[in-house]
Image 1 (cartoon, rainbow, N blue to C red):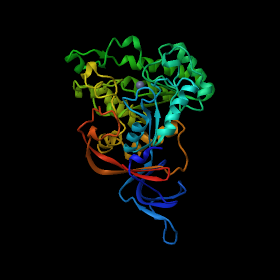
Image 2: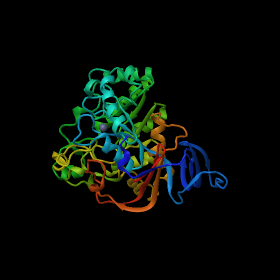
Image 3: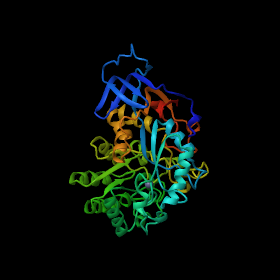
Length: 431
Ligand SMILES: [Zn+2]
């Protein structure tokens, strides 16, 4: 464990968080007291006070603070092993802590690819040594994420949170069908980055007005939704538990909404940047380049609707750090990917909750409860908490990030809602 980089102290064996705004699985309730013994939640007193008079427990005053189960991001790139110039498990998990997360799921775009027990063990060794919070690795669906040969899912399933070839779509329908049949047999999740390579044609931003006006090469929406449409059909036929990564188009929202109504076992995520920006907000800077790209205003509004009506289950950052050099070449030449762990809560609180689009309970569901439930990461009664000051106003300054990646479209944005402390495995961290 290397989380000593943040100031922290040990929590007492027996304590009470007094007067917090607590969002639990049934919804929010103000002025809740939470009693913790040996890192387990033993009592939650809604609206009432736990009598601490004749008990030897410490009291932590959390008046006017939001307290939640630790946030959980199911889509991050920690870049290690293989790409340590971009990020490491140590810096990436520190960034996650500063964003209010106590758990992340790490994508398999690594070298070596976690496509065998030997390879995933290499990643797990670094996690055990350097991670300051829980890191659940994905294994790839196919060898080397190349899309040709299925990994040994049966051997990998005890190590991997789910299976994904993130970074590219599985192009072959028969390959994806085989993967889903095996996943169904084993009871594991396929999480897919959906992208039809034949439709990319060298594009790198959304096929919209900004792109045409400025003579860039376009990524059409169909490259995403066409593969989602195929996979939803396969998931329906095979009975597979299917999770769609970072959806960005209005068609994707509609397809998933319809599939859910038919009883397909599908869940999905989108990222904060797709909910806040549209292509008219783009600047010719690397910090606005990621895959999938920021889409049109219509797409953004459809995603917000999908959040509000429950079609979209999770907000995940797709935290994807690169070096400053790789992000310095404008929209055309920069690498795809932006960082997100240290801004996600403030961005979503400011742009979704404060504007009255969703409730704070809904936001906590999207960023903590749903991701844990869907991926089976919920440890009942575990006293790992994120603490937020919702009234705190702050400005996004990438130079202050713990992440090695500094490229974010949210740079300079004024936000409300700041993670202030984490209680994790019996210690309290000041963020
Ligand atoms: Zn992806």
